[in-house]
Structures are given as structure tokens and as C-alpha cells.
Length: 267
Image 1 (cartoon, rainbow, N blue to C red):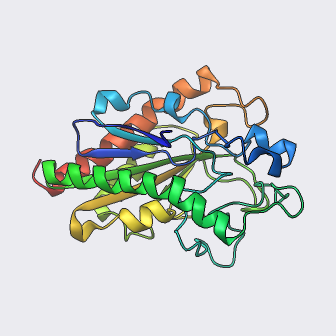
Image 2 (image 1 turned 45 degrees about the vertical axis):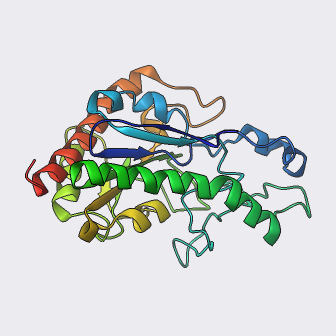
């Protein structure tokens, strides 16, 4: 069984969508509470929202498994990404509301976590690293765009309402400053859309681990509020009208990052 899909493009751009997967293996389903099988904390509809990536020549990497099985944007040793705040784990045990995902006593143990890491996490990251290596060999550099979305209000994870567009570059360590500046400037095309750079979400494991400007790989995470393009409550329906307003902004942001990265290398 393929645990991910990789579309190879022609541009020096790889877009990773680590939380779009919705599958839970049949053998694991009885261990979850019934509510978990609806995978409510998915980054819904990102394929559709980013349907312009083919025009940009991007490579795209997406998983099959839900983040409830394993979180591909967490380090393999499960070190917390945001010390002092509520964190989701490598093998999450809670909904974003803080409620338990598993039946009592059915949480993954150490051996289960290792098995899931080998079966789902490692193949995804092998593919991600492999594609970045291929892109860099072909173009001399690579740009990684880590695409996410989240409900705009989740008290367990953050206070108040999240800005609409949250750009993360690990406090500047994951991408050249000119790329961050270009992406942030592109946000301002949308009146009434709020944005922040390296706020509550600074980039997870993927951005922090693979973003290595000194080695000609630049990484940007974009965490966006789902209210921009869909209903944030079940059935989590895509909103064509709202999506049509934010899609040009997203395309401009990715395009600006690509252009800024190219300028660094004389392209």
C-alpha cells in the first residue's frame, strides 16, 4: 500500500501537505473513540485550494494516513515543537479540543509508535528528502512550501482568534530573509486578510529540519485559517466563493517565494 503520493514537477518547488491524509488503518479503528473516525482535525481541501500548483510546475507530496495515526510534521523522537504550550504528539492522543482520541487504555505504546514511525513517517520523509535532493541537483537550489490549514479558534492550542495567514520560517532560520519578505508582501494583496510572520506557528519539524539556506534549501510553512475557504464545522464543506477570493493571494505568495528564491541564484 502506498502511504503517500508524489507528483514530480519541473520547477525548483516542492509543496508538502503533511496533514491532508484521512485514512485510519482498519486494525486501529476499534481503539479510537467513534468521534475520531471523522478525522475532524484534518487540513481539509488543500488539494483543491492549491489547484494552481500545476501551473507553477511544483512537485507535490501528500500522505494517505490521518494525522491521528501519525503526525508527519513532528520529529521522530517526539520532542515538543512549542515548549510551554499545548503540543500535538508524533502519535497524537488528543483532539484539538484536548479530548482523548483513544478508548481508555488503547493509546499507542512505545512499540506501536516505533511501528507507525517505520510504516508511515519514514517513507514520507524519505520521499521528501529525495525530492528536495533531486530538485537541488537539477536547479542548484530548492524551495519547500509546507501547506497547512486549521480552525481559526482552538482554545486548547492558542488564545483568541488566529491571524488568517501565518507564515513560519523558524524565526528566520529556515529561509533567506528576502523570501520571507516577498511572501509577507504578497499577503497584503488581500484587503481584510490578516497575517503574521513567525507568530504562534513558526514552522513545525518539516520547516525546521529541511529549511537549510546554507545548503540551498529554503523552507516556508503557511498555516491558514480554514474560515478563509471552507466551513469550520461538520461537514467541513468547501466554500467556492470564499476560496475564490483567497486563491489568488495564495498563488501570489507561492509565486513570490519562488521568484525570490530564484533571484538569490541568478534566475
